Image 1 (cartoon, rainbow, N blue to C red):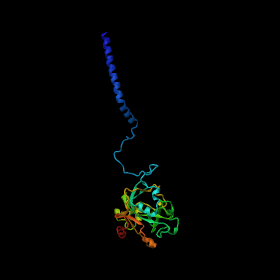
Image 2 (cartoon, rainbow, N blue to C red; image 1 turned 90 degrees about the horizontal axis):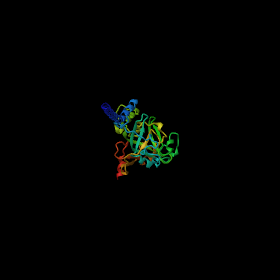
Image 3 (cartoon, helix red, strand yellow; image 1 turned 180 degrees about the vertical axis):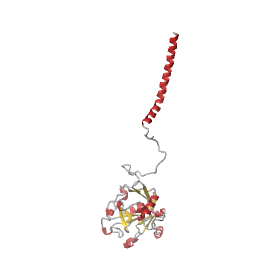
Image 4 (cartoon, helix red, strand yellow; image 1 turned 180 degrees about the horizontal axis):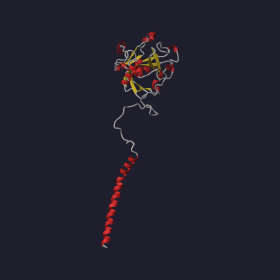
Length: 283
């Protein structure tokens, strides 16, 4: 009987130890399962928040709806003079084939009014394969070559044959890439390092800095994936905009004197400052 009692006591102690072990196994099981999963997939990355943020990239074409700050077709659908002034303060973006994005704020423009304008390539209603972009829907690029080597970029507006020439930008992003492009493409003083204010201070300079050539002719600025316009954070008010005569059109008679060039007063990025026009505006 004593022997039987001792055996029963040992069985109860063994049972308690077994129950405790089962509880411990249950508590450890999730962790063990985790380790087992890692063992099965040792090469899977550990997903979690990144330790550092990469450079900000444009997401305009990663979503079917695009980005709200990209200016659409309706922005360009206005008369040339109005559009030329509306461009001031907006940001031109150029995406290079390697994904690099260059940005510049527009600080100077010129309006060309179409067939009546003796300085316009469409004067007299002339339509040729070269100037076809001027007669296409508002927002179409018209890129032409001058002196056989330099390019100028215009954007069509309301009115057949009317457009706006982009004359100068304030560089905002990708300045070193702009400097490299300008140094590669410009003639004569290629060895001299360009100052920031020299990068886009002229219609052909900005085309060099953004790698814009004849292949951009007739592209849609509202839809293209390599070049587009963003709404700028600040737009100049009326007193900050100077209206002056256009540059380099002495052949156009009275049209050469019309105040159809617009620029941001005081901007160091403007190609040509007209002190007389500025004084007249303040008088």
